[in-house]
Image: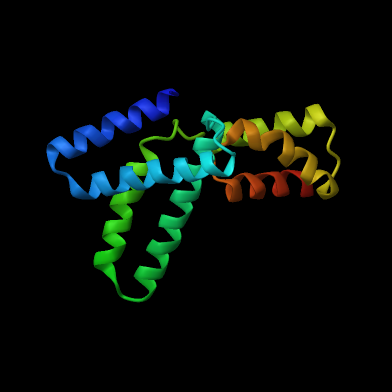
Length: 151
């Protein structure tokens, strides 16, 4: 078992003991998402990077739901989604700051010799594995696009 699986199992047990239904339901959905990923991989164990991607997907789903609920006047459902979002985020490593991301983008662009927007794919391919679970892909993409268009 990987460390995040142990933490997830322990958290489920704690939520059951505390009778915290929202936390319990959220943790079970996370565990279920990991099981689906494992089945997709034909029973191979899920790596930590893949688990982070699964959790990122769950976070993205919650954020989209929050936007929809708030746009349609369903504040009570948005509050529930926000609570789930906090629980899922607690399983992710500390996010990079904007400054750290900018520094990584600058270093990668220099190292790869990227000359303009046409090299965006190469830069993103190099950066994405390093930032998985610690940076939003949209934010990273925007930073790379800004950096490459300023050359």
